[in-house]
Length: 355
Image (cartoon, rainbow, N blue to C red):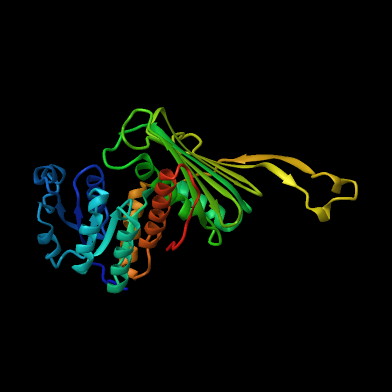
């Protein structure tokens, strides 16, 4: 993989493409990171780009992507355009020899994502997907708990992401909201556990022409189950993840700053057959464990700042970022399978050819 010399302390030249909802956040974080030098903000609406970079005199607004990619000072490009344009923009950047960061989802289809991953591999360039939630302190801690075995064997994961949100014109609620939950799932699962199938059901009660409410059920390779509920029509905002293990249960409530993460030593224990006597073997012995609840202290840092830092680390060292192109590809695989399941009335769709 192409690297910047580890002894090179010069900032990495970067350009942001897209000045809409997410682009200004990237502009701010690249400007605040001493490891990067932001040179360009590219958007078809130059006036909008000019407004975004107005107080950053060193950043040039433009509508010409070719001008950006021809600039030898630019070593990396961050793409924050609509998903349907990700392939065109990101592929052009890779072909110009630039490292690429792409806002979620990686592309509009699994096939498009494969093209991006293959091109980055062929050229030895960093391809990273901006799965921002994976860089929050709480998700980092959850990953540590699952990977260390502190939770025990994973038994289930329930994720709810509902709010009175903006009904999208070009995608359904699964493609709009579920990438967050699926990227978190991909990031925190223990290395030996992966999704093997998905079944999805959805409904459109307001006649929007696409699912506004959906439920995804994923079977995992260890026999556990993961459930994702997404909804544009809820009058209240709920963002919770509950992860049950054989030792502990983890509860993440993203809208509760007073108790964002709680770890419960509570659950159900089942004695094995070897532990049971002759009489007890006639019936399953279940006991309920009621232990302590721990609320770990979590550091405060903007997730996007940590993500930008990881992008720079990957470029400088030539090692894959935590949420690389293949992570984005795995999420795309589940999204496409979920869409097929929706079209088939909730049929279970195997997840094959996962990156």
